[in-house]
Image (cartoon, protein in one colour):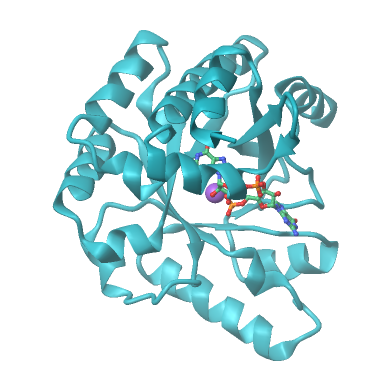
Length: 253
Ligand code: G
Ligand code: G
Ligand code: NA
């Protein structure tokens, strides 16, 4: 099968859908953000997870079409949330390849303008490995986005070879602590100490912190004590279709 071809026709045939996972403000307990996560229902193979098709899309270039689809959907869903009285920041994932093109930032900012979504309501999640490779073109795009007001988050923080210098040099607003750091928290004292250290690094650099993979109240208590800013995980909600996100938001008020 040609996954590349299937992805392109899949976008045209409405096989892709953007799901959302809520992100909760640790201080208020209210949803402040949500992360957009792409889902694909293939007509003959069923659900194909992004971990399977995103790497292929990155190689073939189909990622550009998928990325366009996600951003358009995100901006329209953001408008629908506004209309329903919810002022959220929506984050989306972008792979390094999507930052390689000279016009990426211009293209995305133009789309935001077209859809009338303020850049400050969009957050882009990138991996730390992208920053560490120090590709000039990627950094130019990153700076352009940030200067326009788009928020930048480092995803899976702590899993790369964190040469921490890159955090000072590059335009970043948020770090997302990888869920592997929460696995045995709070039972494992060593893991708790590691989590504490990661959070302190981020605080020292004046970065906001989102903890991923929050699954129980004990983790919430510890994260609050460590002054982690935002919480995301199955305890609150798994990634859900837009209609379910809206229901979730309406139930919390
Ligand atoms: O939702 P799930 O756990 O299946 O996502 C797995 C990974 O796929 C995520 O960690 C994320 O990095 C990636 N992913 C999901 N949606 C997108 C997307 O729209 N664009 C890119 N580039 N990656 C995505
Ligand atoms: O790496 P990234 O943050 O993009 O991955 C997001 C994915 O992580 C989601 O698609 C979801 O499937 C998964 N995820 C989110 N919350 C939890 C959680 O609390 N526990 C576990 N095991 N996975 C989670
Ligand atoms: Na992410």
